[in-house]
Length: 99
Length: 240
Image 1 (cartoon, rainbow over the protein chains, first blue to last red):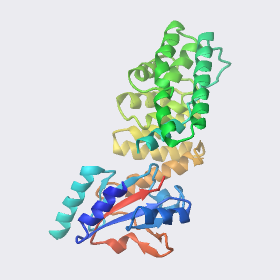
Image 2: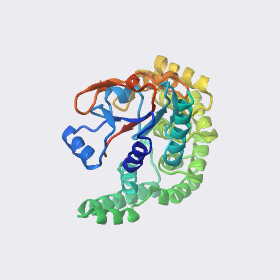
Image 3: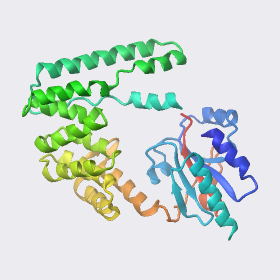
Image 4: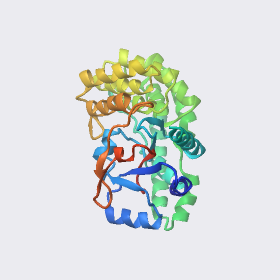
Protein backbone atom coordinates (compact mmCIF):
# COMPACT_ATOMS: atom_id res chain seq x y z
CA UNK A 1 0.00 0.00 0.00
CA UNK A 2 2.76 2.52 0.89
CA UNK A 3 4.37 2.56 -2.60
CA UNK A 4 0.96 3.06 -4.21
CA UNK A 5 0.14 5.88 -1.79
CA UNK A 6 3.53 7.53 -2.34
CA UNK A 7 2.93 7.43 -6.09
CA UNK A 8 -0.56 8.94 -5.69
CA UNK A 9 0.85 11.81 -3.65
CA UNK A 10 3.52 12.38 -6.30
CA UNK A 11 1.15 12.08 -9.28
CA UNK A 12 -1.39 14.50 -7.83
CA UNK A 13 0.96 16.90 -6.06
CA UNK A 14 -0.39 19.89 -7.99
CA UNK A 15 -4.04 18.80 -7.82
CA UNK A 16 -6.65 19.40 -5.09
CA UNK A 17 -5.96 15.98 -3.60
CA UNK A 18 -4.95 14.54 -0.22
CA UNK A 19 -4.44 11.22 1.47
CA UNK A 20 -5.49 11.31 5.11
CA UNK A 21 -4.88 8.39 7.43
CA UNK A 22 -6.53 7.20 10.59
CA UNK A 23 -3.79 5.23 12.27
CA UNK A 24 -4.38 2.57 14.91
CA UNK A 25 -0.82 1.62 15.88
CA UNK A 26 -0.41 1.56 19.64
CA UNK A 27 3.33 2.24 19.80
CA UNK A 28 3.86 5.88 18.88
CA UNK A 29 7.66 5.78 18.87
CA UNK A 30 7.72 2.78 16.56
CA UNK A 31 5.09 4.44 14.37
CA UNK A 32 7.17 7.60 14.03
CA UNK A 33 10.16 5.45 13.06
CA UNK A 34 8.07 3.69 10.40
CA UNK A 35 6.78 7.01 9.00
CA UNK A 36 10.37 8.08 8.45
CA UNK A 37 11.51 4.73 7.04
CA UNK A 38 8.63 4.47 4.59
CA UNK A 39 8.62 8.17 3.70
CA UNK A 40 4.98 8.48 4.72
CA UNK A 41 4.45 12.19 4.30
CA UNK A 42 0.67 12.29 4.37
CA UNK A 43 -1.07 13.21 7.57
CA UNK A 44 -2.86 10.78 9.91
CA UNK A 45 -5.05 11.14 12.92
CA UNK A 46 -3.58 8.95 15.62
CA UNK A 47 -6.46 6.78 16.85
CA UNK A 48 -4.16 4.88 19.28
CA UNK A 49 -5.84 1.45 18.98
CA UNK A 50 -8.09 -0.44 16.59
CA UNK A 51 -10.85 0.46 19.02
CA UNK A 52 -10.03 4.18 18.96
CA UNK A 53 -12.84 6.75 18.75
CA UNK A 54 -12.58 7.47 15.01
CA UNK A 55 -12.32 3.81 13.97
CA UNK A 56 -15.22 2.94 16.25
CA UNK A 57 -17.43 5.72 14.90
CA UNK A 58 -16.66 4.69 11.33
CA UNK A 59 -17.49 1.08 12.29
CA UNK A 60 -14.16 -0.22 11.01
CA UNK A 61 -13.66 -3.97 11.31
CA UNK A 62 -10.84 -4.54 8.82
CA UNK A 63 -7.60 -2.70 8.06
CA UNK A 64 -6.89 -1.11 5.75
CA UNK A 65 -10.33 0.29 4.95
CA UNK A 66 -10.43 2.99 2.28
CA UNK A 67 -13.04 5.68 1.65
CA UNK A 68 -12.78 8.09 -1.25
CA UNK A 69 -14.45 11.45 -0.60
CA UNK A 70 -15.09 14.07 -3.26
CA UNK A 71 -14.27 17.78 -3.14
CA UNK A 72 -17.69 18.50 -1.59
CA UNK A 73 -17.14 16.06 1.25
CA UNK A 74 -19.41 13.33 -0.16
CA UNK A 75 -18.42 9.65 0.15
CA UNK A 76 -18.05 8.31 -3.40
CA UNK A 77 -16.24 4.99 -3.05
CA UNK A 78 -15.47 2.45 -0.37
CA UNK A 79 -12.68 -0.11 -0.39
CA UNK A 80 -11.46 0.49 -3.92
CA UNK A 81 -7.92 -0.69 -4.60
CA UNK A 82 -5.23 -0.62 -7.27
CA UNK A 83 -6.26 0.56 -10.72
CA UNK A 84 -9.85 1.11 -9.57
CA UNK A 85 -8.61 3.52 -6.90
CA UNK A 86 -6.49 5.40 -9.45
CA UNK A 87 -9.46 5.68 -11.81
CA UNK A 88 -11.80 6.80 -9.02
CA UNK A 89 -9.42 9.61 -8.03
CA UNK A 90 -8.91 10.74 -11.65
CA UNK A 91 -12.65 10.83 -12.17
CA UNK A 92 -13.34 12.84 -9.01
CA UNK A 93 -10.48 15.26 -9.71
CA UNK A 94 -11.91 15.87 -13.19
CA UNK A 95 -15.29 16.62 -11.64
CA UNK A 96 -13.75 18.86 -8.98
CA UNK A 97 -11.85 20.84 -11.58
CA UNK A 98 -14.92 21.15 -13.78
CA UNK A 99 -16.43 22.97 -10.83
CA UNK B 1 1.77 -9.25 2.05
CA UNK B 2 1.01 -12.88 1.24
CA UNK B 3 2.75 -13.99 4.40
CA UNK B 4 0.82 -11.47 6.45
CA UNK B 5 -2.47 -12.64 4.98
CA UNK B 6 -1.61 -16.28 5.69
CA UNK B 7 -0.60 -15.46 9.22
CA UNK B 8 -3.95 -13.84 9.86
CA UNK B 9 -5.70 -16.88 8.42
CA UNK B 10 -3.59 -19.27 10.47
CA UNK B 11 -4.00 -17.30 13.64
CA UNK B 12 -7.75 -17.87 13.58
CA UNK B 13 -8.32 -20.79 15.92
CA UNK B 14 -10.11 -23.82 14.61
CA UNK B 15 -13.66 -23.58 15.70
CA UNK B 16 -14.16 -26.20 18.39
CA UNK B 17 -16.77 -28.87 18.03
CA UNK B 18 -19.73 -28.02 20.17
CA UNK B 19 -20.56 -30.20 23.09
CA UNK B 20 -24.21 -30.40 23.64
CA UNK B 21 -26.98 -32.55 24.98
CA UNK B 22 -24.58 -35.20 26.23
CA UNK B 23 -23.51 -35.97 22.73
CA UNK B 24 -21.88 -39.33 22.20
CA UNK B 25 -20.18 -38.98 18.87
CA UNK B 26 -19.12 -42.15 17.17
CA UNK B 27 -15.60 -43.38 17.76
CA UNK B 28 -14.72 -42.46 14.22
CA UNK B 29 -15.60 -38.82 14.87
CA UNK B 30 -13.63 -38.69 18.12
CA UNK B 31 -10.64 -40.29 16.46
CA UNK B 32 -10.75 -37.87 13.55
CA UNK B 33 -10.92 -34.88 15.90
CA UNK B 34 -7.98 -36.21 17.89
CA UNK B 35 -6.01 -36.74 14.71
CA UNK B 36 -6.62 -33.14 13.63
CA UNK B 37 -5.68 -31.82 17.03
CA UNK B 38 -2.40 -33.70 17.17
CA UNK B 39 -1.54 -32.77 13.58
CA UNK B 40 -2.22 -29.12 14.36
CA UNK B 41 -0.15 -29.25 17.53
CA UNK B 42 2.74 -30.84 15.69
CA UNK B 43 2.57 -28.15 13.02
CA UNK B 44 2.59 -25.29 15.51
CA UNK B 45 5.45 -26.81 17.51
CA UNK B 46 7.48 -27.02 14.31
CA UNK B 47 6.41 -23.52 13.26
CA UNK B 48 7.42 -21.96 16.56
CA UNK B 49 10.76 -23.78 16.46
CA UNK B 50 11.57 -22.39 13.01
CA UNK B 51 14.24 -19.76 13.52
CA UNK B 52 13.99 -17.55 10.47
CA UNK B 53 11.14 -15.83 8.67
CA UNK B 54 12.11 -17.79 5.54
CA UNK B 55 11.82 -21.10 7.39
CA UNK B 56 8.43 -20.11 8.75
CA UNK B 57 7.30 -19.07 5.30
CA UNK B 58 8.39 -22.42 3.86
CA UNK B 59 6.34 -24.21 6.51
CA UNK B 60 3.10 -22.62 5.34
CA UNK B 61 3.00 -25.21 2.57
CA UNK B 62 2.69 -27.93 5.21
CA UNK B 63 -0.15 -26.30 7.13
CA UNK B 64 -2.80 -28.95 7.84
CA UNK B 65 -5.71 -27.17 6.20
CA UNK B 66 -9.04 -28.22 7.75
CA UNK B 67 -10.51 -28.47 4.23
CA UNK B 68 -8.44 -31.63 3.74
CA UNK B 69 -10.52 -33.40 6.38
CA UNK B 70 -13.93 -32.36 5.06
CA UNK B 71 -14.43 -35.52 3.03
CA UNK B 72 -13.86 -37.74 6.07
CA UNK B 73 -16.33 -35.75 8.17
CA UNK B 74 -18.91 -36.04 5.41
CA UNK B 75 -18.34 -39.83 5.28
CA UNK B 76 -19.04 -40.02 9.01
CA UNK B 77 -22.16 -37.92 8.58
CA UNK B 78 -23.44 -40.15 5.78
CA UNK B 79 -22.70 -43.33 7.74
CA UNK B 80 -24.57 -42.17 10.86
CA UNK B 81 -27.86 -40.65 9.77
CA UNK B 82 -30.06 -39.26 12.51
CA UNK B 83 -27.34 -39.36 15.18
CA UNK B 84 -25.31 -36.81 17.16
CA UNK B 85 -22.32 -37.94 15.10
CA UNK B 86 -24.02 -36.83 11.91
CA UNK B 87 -25.02 -33.51 13.45
CA UNK B 88 -21.55 -32.81 14.88
CA UNK B 89 -19.79 -33.80 11.65
CA UNK B 90 -22.04 -31.46 9.65
CA UNK B 91 -21.45 -28.64 12.14
CA UNK B 92 -17.70 -29.14 11.88
CA UNK B 93 -17.72 -28.98 8.09
CA UNK B 94 -20.06 -25.96 8.00
CA UNK B 95 -17.78 -24.14 10.41
CA UNK B 96 -14.33 -25.06 9.13
CA UNK B 97 -14.63 -25.53 5.39
CA UNK B 98 -15.80 -23.56 2.36
CA UNK B 99 -17.09 -24.70 -1.01
CA UNK B 100 -19.45 -27.48 -2.09
CA UNK B 101 -18.95 -29.57 1.06
CA UNK B 102 -19.99 -26.62 3.18
CA UNK B 103 -23.12 -26.25 1.05
CA UNK B 104 -23.96 -29.92 1.63
CA UNK B 105 -23.34 -29.56 5.37
CA UNK B 106 -25.55 -26.46 5.63
CA UNK B 107 -28.35 -28.15 3.70
CA UNK B 108 -28.05 -31.17 6.00
CA UNK B 109 -28.27 -28.99 9.12
CA UNK B 110 -31.21 -27.10 7.61
CA UNK B 111 -33.01 -30.36 7.01
CA UNK B 112 -32.48 -32.07 10.37
CA UNK B 113 -30.64 -30.03 13.00
CA UNK B 114 -31.81 -26.42 12.77
CA UNK B 115 -32.68 -26.48 16.48
CA UNK B 116 -29.15 -27.32 17.62
CA UNK B 117 -27.69 -24.86 20.09
CA UNK B 118 -24.27 -25.12 18.43
CA UNK B 119 -25.07 -23.03 15.35
CA UNK B 120 -23.88 -19.59 16.58
CA UNK B 121 -20.40 -19.93 15.08
CA UNK B 122 -21.81 -20.94 11.71
CA UNK B 123 -24.16 -17.93 11.76
CA UNK B 124 -21.23 -15.57 12.45
CA UNK B 125 -19.21 -17.02 9.60
CA UNK B 126 -22.05 -16.61 7.08
CA UNK B 127 -21.78 -12.83 7.44
CA UNK B 128 -18.83 -12.99 5.07
CA UNK B 129 -20.57 -15.24 2.54
CA UNK B 130 -23.66 -13.37 1.38
CA UNK B 131 -25.88 -15.39 -0.92
CA UNK B 132 -29.12 -17.30 -1.20
CA UNK B 133 -28.06 -20.22 1.00
CA UNK B 134 -26.65 -17.99 3.75
CA UNK B 135 -29.87 -15.97 3.85
CA UNK B 136 -32.05 -19.07 3.85
CA UNK B 137 -30.00 -20.70 6.61
CA UNK B 138 -30.02 -17.61 8.84
CA UNK B 139 -33.77 -17.09 8.32
CA UNK B 140 -34.45 -20.71 9.26
CA UNK B 141 -32.35 -20.45 12.44
CA UNK B 142 -34.05 -17.18 13.37
CA UNK B 143 -37.48 -18.73 12.89
CA UNK B 144 -36.90 -22.15 14.40
CA UNK B 145 -34.08 -22.10 16.95
CA UNK B 146 -35.30 -22.49 20.54
CA UNK B 147 -32.02 -20.89 21.74
CA UNK B 148 -32.13 -17.10 22.11
CA UNK B 149 -28.34 -16.66 21.85
CA UNK B 150 -28.34 -18.55 18.56
CA UNK B 151 -31.29 -16.52 17.23
CA UNK B 152 -29.38 -13.35 18.20
CA UNK B 153 -26.43 -14.36 16.02
CA UNK B 154 -28.78 -15.39 13.22
CA UNK B 155 -30.63 -12.07 13.08
CA UNK B 156 -27.47 -9.96 13.49
CA UNK B 157 -25.69 -11.73 10.66
CA UNK B 158 -28.84 -11.84 8.52
CA UNK B 159 -28.91 -8.04 8.81
CA UNK B 160 -25.44 -8.04 7.24
CA UNK B 161 -26.12 -10.48 4.40
CA UNK B 162 -29.63 -9.56 3.35
CA UNK B 163 -29.70 -7.94 -0.07
CA UNK B 164 -32.63 -5.76 1.04
CA UNK B 165 -31.29 -2.46 2.49
CA UNK B 166 -34.55 -1.57 4.20
CA UNK B 167 -34.80 -4.98 5.81
CA UNK B 168 -31.19 -4.69 6.96
CA UNK B 169 -31.96 -1.54 8.96
CA UNK B 170 -35.11 -3.10 10.45
CA UNK B 171 -33.19 -6.21 11.51
CA UNK B 172 -30.43 -4.15 13.16
CA UNK B 173 -33.12 -2.25 15.08
CA UNK B 174 -34.62 -5.55 16.23
CA UNK B 175 -31.16 -6.74 17.33
CA UNK B 176 -30.81 -3.66 19.54
CA UNK B 177 -34.34 -3.96 20.93
CA UNK B 178 -34.61 -7.71 21.46
CA UNK B 179 -31.11 -9.19 21.54
CA UNK B 180 -29.00 -6.19 22.58
CA UNK B 181 -27.89 -7.66 25.91
CA UNK B 182 -26.22 -10.71 24.33
CA UNK B 183 -22.43 -10.76 24.50
CA UNK B 184 -20.59 -10.17 21.24
CA UNK B 185 -16.79 -10.02 21.12
CA UNK B 186 -15.72 -7.48 23.76
CA UNK B 187 -19.13 -5.83 24.01
CA UNK B 188 -22.75 -6.63 23.30
CA UNK B 189 -24.82 -7.21 20.18
CA UNK B 190 -26.39 -3.78 20.82
CA UNK B 191 -22.96 -2.09 20.58
CA UNK B 192 -22.20 -3.91 17.34
CA UNK B 193 -25.61 -3.25 15.78
CA UNK B 194 -25.54 0.45 16.72
CA UNK B 195 -22.22 0.77 14.89
CA UNK B 196 -23.75 -0.93 11.87
CA UNK B 197 -26.83 1.31 11.98
CA UNK B 198 -24.56 4.38 12.04
CA UNK B 199 -22.72 3.00 9.02
CA UNK B 200 -25.95 2.32 7.09
CA UNK B 201 -27.30 5.79 7.88
CA UNK B 202 -24.16 7.93 7.62
CA UNK B 203 -21.36 6.16 5.79
CA UNK B 204 -23.01 5.11 2.55
CA UNK B 205 -22.01 6.10 -0.97
CA UNK B 206 -23.49 9.54 -1.72
CA UNK B 207 -23.63 10.64 1.92
CA UNK B 208 -21.65 13.56 3.31
CA UNK B 209 -18.77 12.12 5.33
CA UNK B 210 -19.14 12.71 9.08
CA UNK B 211 -16.66 15.19 10.53
CA UNK B 212 -13.42 13.78 11.91
CA UNK B 213 -11.58 15.84 14.47
CA UNK B 214 -8.56 14.70 16.42
CA UNK B 215 -4.81 14.93 16.90
CA UNK B 216 -2.22 13.85 14.39
CA UNK B 217 0.83 11.85 15.41
CA UNK B 218 2.60 15.02 16.55
CA UNK B 219 -0.34 16.03 18.73
CA UNK B 220 -1.63 18.72 16.37
CA UNK B 221 -5.40 18.82 16.02
CA UNK B 222 -7.01 18.86 12.57
CA UNK B 223 -10.34 18.17 10.91
CA UNK B 224 -11.58 16.35 7.84
CA UNK B 225 -13.52 19.48 6.82
CA UNK B 226 -10.20 21.37 6.59
CA UNK B 227 -9.81 19.42 3.35
CA UNK B 228 -13.12 20.43 1.77
CA UNK B 229 -12.39 21.37 -1.84
CA UNK B 230 -9.99 18.47 -2.25
CA UNK B 231 -10.52 14.86 -3.25
CA UNK B 232 -9.59 12.84 -0.16
CA UNK B 233 -8.49 9.23 0.15
CA UNK B 234 -9.30 8.36 3.74
CA UNK B 235 -7.23 5.36 4.78
CA UNK B 236 -7.81 3.52 8.06
CA UNK B 237 -4.47 1.83 8.54
CA UNK B 238 -1.96 0.27 10.85
CA UNK B 239 1.65 -0.72 10.28
CA UNK B 240 1.14 -4.39 11.05
